Image (cartoon, rainbow, N blue to C red; front, side, top):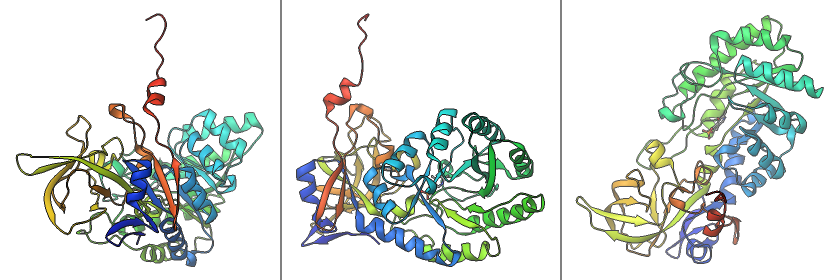
Length: 419
Ligand SMILES: *Cc1c(COP(=O)(O)O)cnc(C)c1O
């Protein structure tokens, strides 16, 4: 459920008309709804209430805007970070270090140093060489790094190949068969304290079976590791629960169904559970607001050319992703259209031969469910400015990232004087 609805025939984000935002900020622009973010954060927490008091660490990569992170910090959420930049953003947004988890296969010594300096809750270590490097960095600083190994459970997540992470051919985690050896190594390293285990098998999962299978494998491994003398106090079950994009598709499992499955699968584990939801919390809380530049006649049907492009919202070109297309002031008619941006790539296509509301030049439209993996993946390809972002709360709204002037974009280059 979200808070983007028609009021007197015009789409609003909570109490604010998207026409007002388009007029004052220009388009394209991302618009986020605070009430939707808060609701999702609460629903997810309630769904997990039966599992005790889990640490819920928002996957910052889904939407790293500091205003969004601050909204989640107020909900008691922590952060799952994958770079020094994300760690700094989370801290700057008021997320305490003891609610931060650091994931990722390529943590550098500098990033490890920063995280140790901050005193984060847990490093999710993804290989034995990483464990050795982290131990060396910690020893050098006179610190002990709290770690979990991220285990690759070798299950097929059943999602798009580019967001599948839990198969043995993927780069993520320590292979299931090597886990016992990896823990033995970590226990012998002077700079590490083993505190848990972690797993994350992919994103936009629309079926609970692969998650259940992964958790069962993790449970069996925990018993084996404990028998070998390791103390496991945390189990991080990752993120990945899918959200509805295409209204014609079946609904993904609800947070409540996920919570029940988790409670059952983790019964008797005797750990503090951790979760890393990203998409589930913010996807439906954001739209990309865009204006139709012109309609161009095509061979099959009309091209609706809009001022947003693949550099603003990459998901359709990267993952063949589907975003619902809605009119801000619908007239009630429909048309068959191919919706494209101005970028010089055929991949700059948001929808092909789709029945959409009837659009004319100058109309406003939104791409729905764009709050996750939207602005965060934006680039300046074709020398287009980074997309600005707006956060709405009730009838209040603010620009939470300003549109970058093109002059700034160009001034970022340096032309050497020897040229
Ligand atoms: C991306 C990612 C997440 C979040 O995934 P969602 O599908 O957005 O919930 C969680 N944990 C890790 C390690 C990730 O890489």
